[in-house]
Structure formats: structure tokens, C-alpha cells
View 1 (spheres, helix red, strand yellow):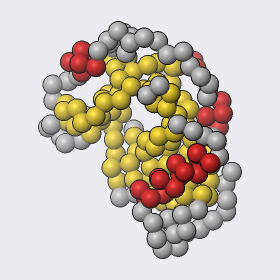
View 2: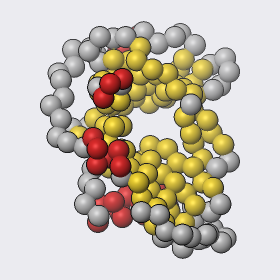
View 3: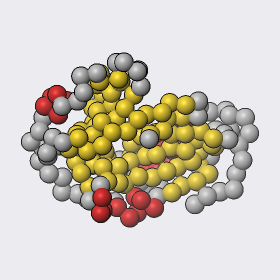
Length: 170
């Protein structure tokens, strides 16, 4: 849904909007969701939430929720990818340790945090990965590096963009 709405002066922070969004999703029946990234534009905070199963963040089960920063109201919800992809998954056993996967990262990267995630791949496939949130010691830029939990191969790299209006990936 998309409510035709404009926001006036902000009375809540983006972090509060994220919390309100989680409460809204829980009440609406979308349980076990975790926020990933958000952006703010014209007083509206749009947050990406992903489903969590057995401590694995399932990025294919994404919901985008927009919250006005003036009244804290939900003004838009896009659950199309969640509705298309959500199901109980049989997740494979992981043979590769986090430590061994981390050893394959470039030496200029400092790991800030690690998650186990399911990422979408070509042709509707999904890949179980370790997601390493890292900082490049030379440029100070932050990246997400995805290492396949089964093969140990690098699956993807995303650059984190911190801007005044939120956090985005490229």
C-alpha cells in the first residue's frame, strides 16, 4: 500500500522510525524481521527489513516500510518480495568456519561484524553466505563481503554509502 502523504517537521528520529516499523510488522503478522538499511527523503524514512530464520538473515524475504518522521505513521508497505519468496527453508549444514571464511578476505579489510545470511542469486536460486561488514584500512570505506558458506568462494561485494539521508548499498 502507498498512502498519499507529505511529512512536515520531524518529531521522531530514523532510529525511532525503525523501532515503530518493527512493531507494526509484528502486529501485521510479519514476525522475526530485522532491519538492514534505511534512507530518509522528504521526511519519510524507508526501511528494508529481512526475515530471520534460525539466526540466518534471509534477504530474499524483504519488506520495505516507509514511516513519516513527523507523526511516526506507516505511509507505505511493499511486501512483494516477501510474498513471492517467503517459506520455511531447509538450510544446509555449514562446513566452513567463520574464521576460515574470514581468512579469505583482503588483508586491507578490518571486520566490523559478521552475519550468516541467505542472498538471492541468478535464476531464483539462493546462496548461504557469511556477510562480513568491513572497513578498508586505506580508504576508510565500508563494504559488505559475502563468502559462500559451502564453497568458501566470494559471492558478492557491496559498497556501503553513508549519506545524510541514510545508508544505502551499491
